[in-house]
Length: 637
Ligand SMILES: Cc1cc2nc3c(=O)[nH]c(=O)nc-3n(C[C@H](O)[C@H](O)[C@H](O)COP(=O)(O)OP(=O)(O)OC[C@H]3O[C@@H](n4cnc5c(N)ncnc54)[C@H](O)[C@@H]3O)c2cc1C
Ligand SMILES: *[C@@H]1O[C@H](CO)[C@@H](O)[C@H](O)[C@H]1NC(C)=O
Ligand SMILES: *[C@@H]1O[C@H](CO)[C@@H](O)[C@H](O)[C@H]1NC(C)=O
Ligand SMILES: *[C@@H]1O[C@H](CO)[C@@H](O)[C@H](O)[C@H]1NC(C)=O
Ligand SMILES: *[C@@H]1O[C@H](CO)[C@@H](O)[C@H](O)[C@H]1NC(C)=O
Ligand SMILES: *[C@@H]1O[C@H](CO)[C@@H](O)[C@H](O)[C@H]1NC(C)=O
Ligand SMILES: *[C@@H]1O[C@H](CO)[C@@H](O)[C@H](O)[C@H]1NC(C)=O
Ligand SMILES: *[C@@H]1O[C@H](CO)[C@@H](O)[C@H](O)[C@H]1NC(C)=O
Ligand SMILES: *[C@@H]1O[C@H](CO)[C@@H](O)[C@H](O)[C@H]1NC(C)=O
Ligand SMILES: *[C@@H]1O[C@H](CO)[C@@H](O)[C@H](O)[C@H]1NC(C)=O
Ligand SMILES: *[C@@H]1O[C@H](CO)[C@@H](O)[C@H](O)[C@H]1NC(C)=O
Ligand SMILES: *[C@@H]1O[C@H](CO)[C@@H](O)[C@H](O)[C@H]1NC(C)=O
Image (cartoon, rainbow, N blue to C red):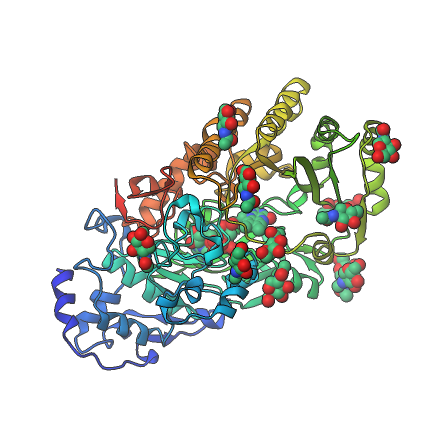
């Protein structure tokens, strides 16, 4: 039905339609952002083209009763070259309706390749130099961090991985075909509708931080939310039993912006440690851990209300009373799965005095690797105690020039003075002195969390010749001296065999398990979280990199899993090919999440690798023989 119609339409000359003809400003119900009042409406759609039906067929809303909507029409999503792929005039019309917000993908690094017609040696050199600067990459509609799973189809030439065995060239590859630089809700609705009506892959890029490359995909329409930067502070926000300060944040707000606003309004917001991570996208919808998690819980636990465009293209409010199951799923069930969130209201807390600790140490000389690990054992012995004091830490143990380099990015002690902090840590530091640990702590007490964080955490860089796997460290394991010793042995064993470690010490506060949202239940029982990662250089041979990568998933992470039965891991910082991810990321909540997914998105308008409901789908090719490639067609299994 749809396909021949569009073929016919391709031959019709469409007149330019002003944005106002399709999108309408609706009256505000008090809590919407200005950009949320610009919406697509059924009535306006019929004016879109010469024929009423063009507007509704191409851009019309999905079935009003999602439960009875049809299944996907073909086995694969629609790709350029397919009969159902919209013709040029349709894309032009789409762009007109969007008010010129449609961007055809030009990979950033294409300026290093003469055949793209925008070559500049100087700009290429600058891009190469700053390729790992997340702040710059976020400003591009399609650049992402986890470029490996995109197929690395357009890298600055100096970063082309020889192990992929391809000539140095640049193609759109696994990047989306088009991006929509959205500045209002109506544009999001148009994008969701055209994607759904043509069965085109849809992705959302906020910052592109996602470790699982969930913000990219071949042949996709990409909703780029980065410019939705509105924020409102409510001194008193009353809703469903809450009566206190809150922020409403737009979808493009980043963690550093949230913290700056919190400081300005003399409050504390529960956000991540990463500075340029998006607040409302993958972070909070995946759960969101924070330097304040040990006292306040997950970022998702703070959400009071959500605005979103759902798979049928409609704009909805989800909170405790309205669309409550969607509200439940969007708080921890994973992003890019249930809808496009346009804003969230989150509760905030009073200003918080915070003490931070930073240090680093390197093995070598009389400070052997064994001593470094003895120091680790002593520290991990206290994980329960520190987490129960409300502390958090984030640190790494890496291989550098044959030695172990351990840097405490930061330990954070909220609501704690320097004197209290020192007193609580003294027993450990005495032990370290006995071991002979070279310890030069930098301790700062700051009267507000925002500034404490600003001083203690570095700006993140994006690295791409690496990958990771992870596991929670449950309290019951670390509370038992024998099991704890075995766990530390397992951490050490993967380090000994070449992996690098990232460790977190944190808990969820008492009572968190009773919060009725989609946060992985395994989060509620932890006192730590461990990530292992491997890196390689771009000249390493393919067999080596593949074996290293396979070891991560099939040799090393299973050791951690074997010692932590029934626990899980954090979807947003996990293995791209995590076996049995449903269990690891969602535990007993998976069946409910899947049924909500099936109800709200029966046609799988939203797909992300390892997201709820994605098991029906398969990417048709692999990178390095074991990574589902975003540079391949997405088809039903
Ligand atoms: C340097 C660094 C530091 C980090 N620090 C922390 C930390 O302290 N705590 C923590 O919990 N995690 C942390 N993370 C992990 C982080 O939470 C995830 O990478 C997360 O997916 C990033 O979300 P984003 O929206 O910024 O990124 P993107 O890659 O743009 O998006 C991630 C996913 O969210 C979807 N999405 C984005 N916006 C929306 C929206 N508006 N509606 C629906 N879906 C959307 C995308 O489609 C994609 O599936 C960190 C990651 C990095 C790289
Ligand atoms: C790429 O590498 C070459 C050789 O290693 C070096 O001379 C050149 O400056 C690098 N180019 C850029 C853009 O960094
Ligand atoms: C980022 O890249 C620059 C230029 O290649 C390099 O000097 C710098 O060390 C990198 N930063 C990190 C943390 O890798
Ligand atoms: C990254 O780029 C931004 C914007 O140009 C700049 O302000 C910042 O200093 C850069 N960061 C690093 C680590 O180079
Ligand atoms: C890049 O090289 C591959 C492998 O030779 C080839 O298939 C592809 O068409 C090339 N892409 C471009 C844009 O030249
Ligand atoms: C900021 O908040 C703190 C803690 O709640 C309070 O003591 C202080 O008076 C507030 N300052 C201002 C300027 O409102
Ligand atoms: C390691 O710690 C020392 C002492 O505080 C500090 O001078 C140095 O800058 C730190 N190194 C790094 C890479 O942070
Ligand atoms: C901070 O500490 C004070 C005094 O110890 C205590 O009364 C208060 O409840 C603490 N606040 C939080 C958020 O833990
Ligand atoms: C280790 O060596 C350093 C000098 O390299 C010395 O100052 C220190 O006392 C030694 N520590 C132990 C425990 O031997
Ligand atoms: C936050 O802390 C810093 C460092 O202690 C201080 O200079 C600043 O005045 C504080 N700001 C607010 C708003 O409390
Ligand atoms: C790449 O890593 C290998 C070890 O895996 C090392 O032998 C080689 O020197 C490294 N090459 C570069 C250019 O760093
Ligand atoms: C992978 O693991 C095996 C067995 O644990 C080990 O022998 C091998 O060296 C590892 N390979 C790499 C590249 O890490």
